[in-house]
Image (cartoon, rainbow, N blue to C red; front, side):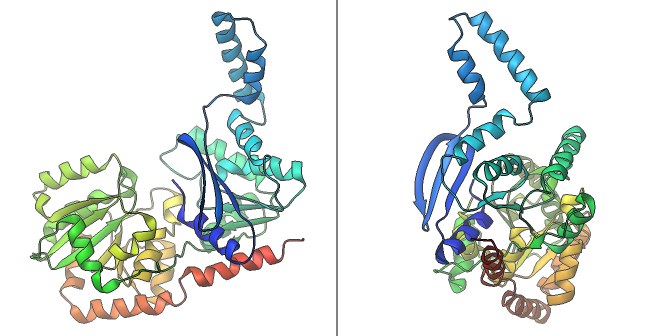
Amino acid sequence: MIDRRIILEAKTLVKAGHKVTLLAGFETPFEEHFEQDGIEIHRYSYDWDDERLKKIRAKLPANDRLRMLVNKTYMFLARKFFEISPFDKFIISKVLEFEADVYHVHDLPCLKAGFYASKARKVPLIYDAHELYYAQNILPIKLQKLYFSLEKKYIKHPDVVITVNSFIARLMAERYKIASPQVIMNCTELPEDFAPESANQKLRHKGNIPANYEKIVLYQGWISPERNIETLVKGVKWFPENTCLAIIGYGEYEKNLREIAITEGVAERVFFLGQVPSNEMLNYSAGADLGVIPYKAIDDNHLYCSPNKLFEYILAGVPVIADDLPFFRMIKDKYGAIEVADMSSPNTFAKVVYQLICSFSKLEKLKKMCHDASQELNWEKESEKLLAIYADIPK
């Protein structure tokens, strides 16, 4: 529920001497307040009501039919005519409870609320776009258009716009007619207890992976249909006999993948490990021989993606197989460490796995490339960009 990128940025600012208050959640089952890594965290539970409507209801007589009529009429008008939605109003009300010198909002759903809060406090606003939020084909076309219009309108107001790679930065500049956003990539840091020498055993133990599977191909991340994970499962039948597939993550689509594994006759070679805390992930990732990112260019958001798992694999020293998407191609051309494959074809994907697993020298060369790439693709380097942005904000 708490994004790794947000935590890394917050920790960096705290370490540099800033005080960071993180407001998050909004869909959590209950409210909670705590401190983590020096960050003051407040997680809220939004009841999908409207603070303004609550005040109106409090003045109404005890008549259920009247209250229902007022509710329906108000919410209809709010959705159709109010610039500040009930959700925005809720966020703004929570944000304005805290004094701040800067508001740093993450992703489109918080942009409008961040704008109004920064306007009320007369302080700078930073917008950190983690993706092309509107360009997700899992969203209805009408909603995609609405989100595009919303971002186009409000992205002109932040003092600084940040995004995750140069491809998305270029598109945002072109489509919104703004200066090119600054880029802070989704790199990560090694955990303090990083132990690559025991990672393979750790991975095997969690997945109950038998010793006869000497090589492990790993997928880690959210398990959902648009991520093309079924290609990996179907491809297992063409893996070398000593090679299996491990899947770390969770999601409703897992049951579909289990059924596909049974249908394809590979259920005994596909291991579902469940969820792993993000701060422990690299101690499992490092135990794999190959890491896979199966995403296809099903929309602009996927086409120009640069997901967390790419940087996790590289930092853990695990060569990557991915589709020939722009960011992956750029990383391959600059650092190596990636082999591209047609991820729409289980057989073609499996052939790349087979070639790499059966070529010790090729695999070792790719691991060396991962190590070399990790000297640049790490959070220590990216954090310098964040601190430079904050250093330029007027006191």
